[in-house]
Amino acid sequence: MDVRSANHTGLESGLASCECPECGGGVPATANLMRGEVVRCPDCSAELEVTGTAPIRLEVAPRVEEDWGE
Ligand SMILES: [Zn+2]
Image (cartoon, rainbow, N blue to C red; front, top):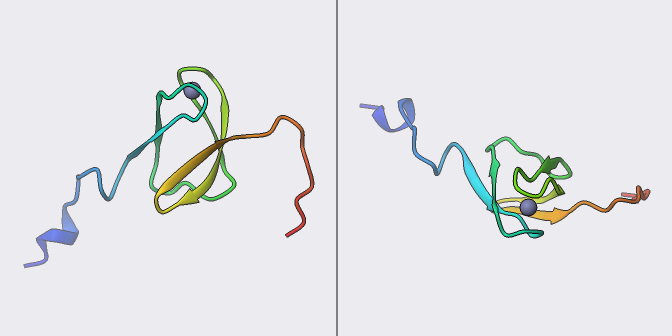
């Protein structure tokens, strides 16, 4: 039976929670976040940039827009 892949509601495969580097509060993050995406902390409204996805890492997004040549 392929029950394992058919019905997964656990935290491991779905929602994840990250710690806000600004205030230490919990920031809800979905599994389909992409690197470079900016999320907002529900506690302190800081804009946090996703710098990693496995595991999810957040850093305070810089206010000044800079051109990062990649
Ligand atoms: Zn925060």
